Length: 192
Image 1 (tube, rainbow, N blue to C red):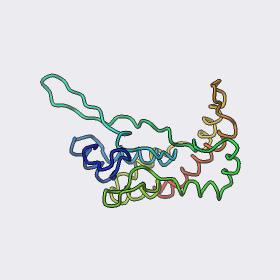
Image 2: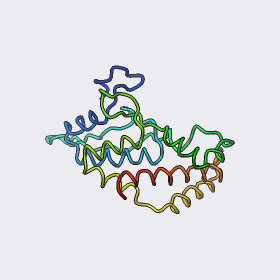
Image 3: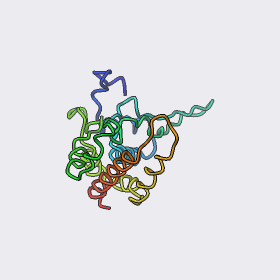
Image 4: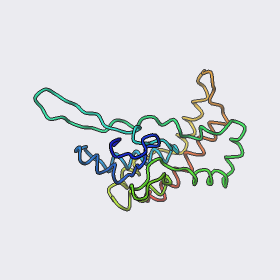
């Protein structure tokens, strides 16, 4: 991927359609399924940093055999879950209109293709993937297979860890609200 980048510092151009072509060229299995799940996961958590160095595949080479490629798990998801907001701003951001506005302005690093290079809205990118590759719908839906109460419970449980920078109850409520709101939007576009 880095060979096609004109701006290596910013990771541009970076288009989903080109990512899929590259993956197919290397004969990775279930390319559209992996991208559907990964984009849905990124949309669910609001990850803005899936640039070309933050996805990849693993190559297994055995003496005398053809190399086999497989996707690496999604990694480096740190710019997500409202990380950029200070504690004092979280309560105001949970107001429904402000929360929806925040989510609407979130973008994925990846655009649709190199002709439309630039970050794309998380929801728009998922919708375009489903429209272009109908088999992606099931992959997106699979990421949404959890109950809202589970998000609440996991976020609340994170407040119990004894760490130097605590995950507060206010942060837990904010992150859970983000996940549930994004889940509802993804469910609507994926037909769940």
